[in-house]
Length: 87
Image 1: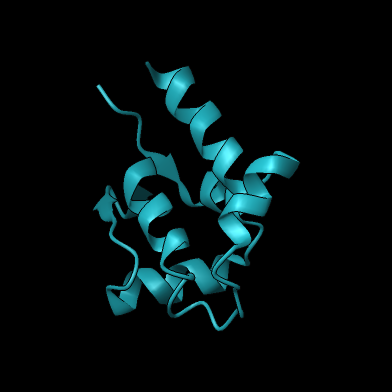
Image 2 (image 1 turned 180 degrees about the vertical axis):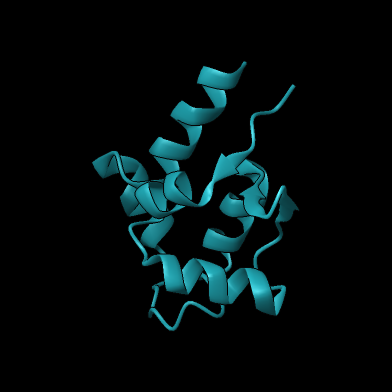
């Protein structure tokens, strides 16, 4: 079973503000579900949103950023670690 991420975990992984994450969720740009009044996001949906350049976050992202992040141990590496932890 895949583990859902909380907003706090999404903020920690992406290093974006909570407001940016909530804005993307409410606009439907980042897929998520409300569970008991709290948002939850699947790691695969977060990775797809990040790979698309975080539309709706108002943060400029270059096309090559996910590759650089992987080398530096950034967002993509943190997502992979969370997925491996859940497995």
